[in-house]
Length: 143
Ligand code: DQA
Image (cartoon, rainbow, N blue to C red; front, side):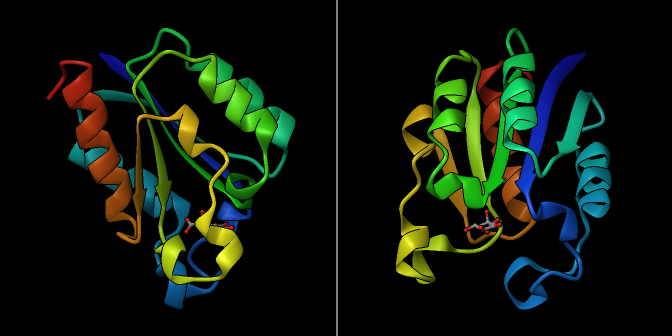
């Protein structure tokens, strides 16, 4: 079974009630269930943390897996540590943002992690995770 890591960073544990007009009403548990139902053939490692060092370790855990989907939250915009961790993991990698970061504050338009991933999805809400999975499975020969 293909193993895919879906990692959510800082403040994403608040999904469902955090700025629903921007991030939607689904919780992370809802998104996880949606992914498991949509991709029953995938062995998901679905996690969230507010601790950057923990996230870096989880990125490393994805070595040898079928792929990595990551929503780094605000770390997107300033974490070179996360960039370097992602750069070192040679699996299909997609950066996901629920909101359209390009239509928001100026500082959200820059991602320091994008150069270390294969693709970026923004503004599709929870659908972005499915889109990212489609790419990962296509790349890894699983769909
Ligand atoms: C986010 C966008 C980031 O700018 C923000 O800090 C988040 C969520 C998104 O999913 O749209 O926490 O990554």
